[in-house]
Length: 249
Image (cartoon, rainbow, N blue to C red; front, side, top):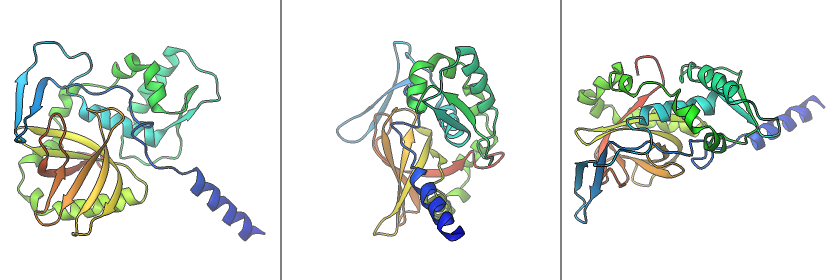
């Protein structure tokens, strides 16, 4: 009897578990860019200043990624419960954002009245944006020095293998992508698979493109990561480094 009950509970837990979804578990609005980017037919990136002021938040890819992790790990949405006042939601958002993203805890902060982060952020964008924190401090993070460290290139395979193991267990992990001067970005990896050539393919949430899944590969031949072409990046190889997985990272 006890064995049957244990099997039932295990099956129930497996059914309830779900994979991170960039159309549900992220913000419905995007981080905006300070510059205008254009990739021409030859694959060359052109960067120009913007004449018009960006409509949304800028410089916030670190903040968006960190906060999406915090919602995924430490929040629970209860769509059948009645909605709260804006002030009460603000208090819960502030409490959530104070939790270090690398922590492990069972207790979750409840956000009633909504099924997921996407729908919640559609109604409370201003409150969320107002409590994300300072984008300037993300540029001064201690872990940013790694972008100039040649040792990181040598360790790309071990970084990729560790990322693969974590994501395969159902975890999500923030990855700092760098190729200066034009790439200084963070994405959130949530899915992984092996490639026939010995590489690895990850799917990730990109704060610059709300609701879209992007590709991040580890290329075994060059021992570097490869990020797909998008409006601000021509596609190609760069360094990948984990962030928000421990203090000082």
